[in-house]
Image 1 (cartoon, helix red, strand yellow):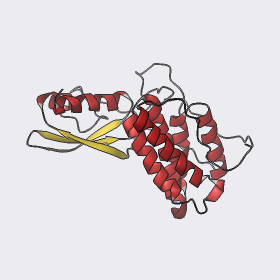
Image 2 (tube, rainbow, N blue to C red):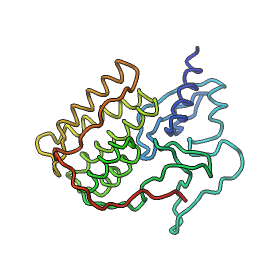
Image 3 (cartoon, rainbow, N blue to C red):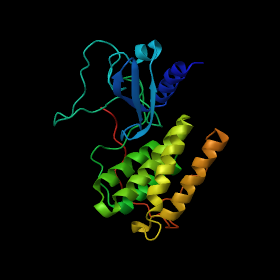
Length: 243
């Protein structure tokens, strides 16, 4: 198999697993493409290749969010006119065909106190919904004060890494988990909100090494986000149905 064929197959696998991609450069018959995480759009890796198969697959698209057909795409927008993705998703956040029954996602305006966000994210992880946990943790990251932001970002990356592992994208999962380990480990000396920063960093590194070594996700136990031994059930917003 040629390098170019491998690049096409890799890009297809990434897209089929729910990942996104964006063309960074075109020139001399070569494409440089960034591989991005599902919703946050963080770059995980890049590929560069240039044969006709890859050029045909990408076409004139600038990224995976562009419709491959030449027709005009009318995007769904909210009341403020901002584009939104109302397509249904499966339990791991992968887009489903319009009209298909999907698993509700979290509300776009989710705004929880840190303790409630951690409890909800833990509950979602325990229920096998790391994509939904990532939505909760990403909302908390964006709302966090500057001195906590990298910690919450690490937690969100951990959940995204788990999501990619469940989707079968083990390479992307391992890289995200290592980034999560680095960020959470930076707070090992005293993390706020009883977040188990040191334990999470160790867990992420161990899990990433397992993925790289074994080539399979397995059924590793979900990490514990905090050092709290018992969970106090609180009333938190539930997922919102797409539409």
